[in-house]
Structures are given as structure tokens and as C-alpha cells.
Image 1: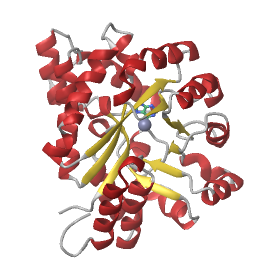
Image 2: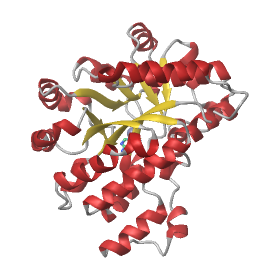
Image 3: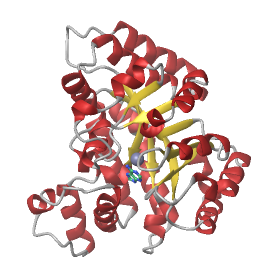
Length: 334
Ligand SMILES: Nc1ncnc2[nH]cnc12
Ligand SMILES: [Zn+2]
């Protein structure tokens, strides 16, 4: 049995495996610029965040119907469960679908259908986090937020993703103010490719409770001190960082230094279909490449539940943390 963990940084569109992409393309009559799944896999070499995003947006165009979104999410939940994920807070990018004519209702109801049966089918509790594309306008984000009002019973929070450089968090100040008024939790990608100042800005201007990535905080000792003092959770994604060249090699990933500094780190998969692994694979990778030991793996797993939005189910949170504390590494892999 793998180490129980929560996944807090996962883009559902980034779980689209080549096989499912081709099946949906055939079903929906979408032309893909690749001969087959094998050829598509060979395209998974990225220079930076943007070169990945270009393929990510192109491929998700195979998603059209409620069934497509339900199938995508159910496939992720099955894979995640097999790697010990017991709770998943799942990002989705509504503007990437509405901009090509897929209604928000189709996306949310399709994903929602898979999430509704997740605990029963996979033993994974879930939350949905709606992300705004930061390289689109603040007006478009606001329009998306307001359009989501009928679906807020399904949406726990808002996030901010896509191309980071040149799109500072403050661009979305009003959007996050309205999100807070609507009772939504707030997170944002910051410090993946953008500077440490974007991390401070996400905290100060957007009022985020967690920082997605936050990797570049290590360039600013005062910021590290603040994040440690305030126990701000960081949702790190080691395999993603290597594939998108935020770090040169996995062996050079700052995770151990970040944990040494006292930062509240979690380990997640980001876009597992594209970056070579799901949550458990990321845990295995840091254990293997960085020599992260068993007690630190346990700390990462514990942090994942502590940083999760399980406030409305403290009983489940306590139960899952107790499972982490009692986990026997000798009996199985993490
Ligand atoms: N790693 C990432 N950074 C920013 N936006 C994303 N959208 C999907 N994955 C992303
Ligand atoms: Zn991400």
C-alpha cells in the first residue's frame, strides 16, 4: 500500500493521456497533428513553460462533451488512487474551454459527475478549483467568475495559472476580491517562472492561502523567512520543474533545502500525463534522486493533508493524518 497523500496541485487537463486524447479525437471528429499516441508522446520535450502550454491547449481541444470531462477525471482519480492519493484538489481551466465554444456547464457538470462518485469508486475525496488564465485579461477572468455563480456548490476555490512572466498577480486584484466575497478559497501559481516578488504579491494582493510552486522563493531570504513564519504551504511539482526546465536536473531540485529552511512543502504532479509521473511517482523521484528519507516523506504527506481545504471534514483530515503517522515504509513503497 502506498503512502497516503493529498494532491493539491493538479491540472485535470494535464492528465489527458495520449491514448484517451486519440480516442476522444476520433469520437468528436477532431484532427490532431500527430499520427498516433506514440508520435504524440515523442512531442513531449519542452523548452520552457510556454512550449508546454502550446501543446497542452492544443490537445485539450479534444474535450467536448460532459462525458469527455467525466471520463478524463475518472481516469485521473483511478490512477491517483493507485498511487496513494486519498484527497485531490483539482484545477481546471474554464476559459480554455469556453473560448472554443464548450459551455462552462458542460465542463463543471462533467467533472462534477466523476467527482461525485470518487469517494465511493476510488476512496478519494475531492475539491474543484477554478483557475483563471493569467495571460488573458482581468475582465475575462471576472466574466468567468461571475458565469460560475450557478455552479459554486461544486467549486471550492479559485487559482491562477498559464504563462506567468509579465502577468503579475496584482492584475487580478478585483477578481480575487469578488472571489473572496463569494466565499471561495484562494490559491495562485507564483514563483514558477516568475520572480519571488510575484509570491509576495499573491499573498499581499490576492490573499492566497497556498502558493502553487513558489520555487523561486529561495532567491529571497526575507521571503523564505515570511513563508516559514506564516506556515504558507507551497505545492511543489518536482518532475514538472525538470521537464519545464525550472531546475536543470532532479538532483539539483531545492526541495531538501526548502525543507531544511522550515518551509511547508508538499509534492504534487502538476500535469502528470506530460511530465512523466503522477503523485506517487513524484514522491518516488525525490526519494531516489534527492535522498529524501522516510521521515521527510511522511512530513510531506502530513503537510499535504494539513494544507488541504478539508476544513469542512476535519474528521477525515484527522483520520488521513493518523494513517500517515502509522504508515509502515517497510511494508511497501511510498
Ligand atoms: N505548470 C503550470 N504552470 C502554469 N500554468 C499551467 N497550466 C497547466 N500547468 C501549468
Ligand atoms: Zn500548475
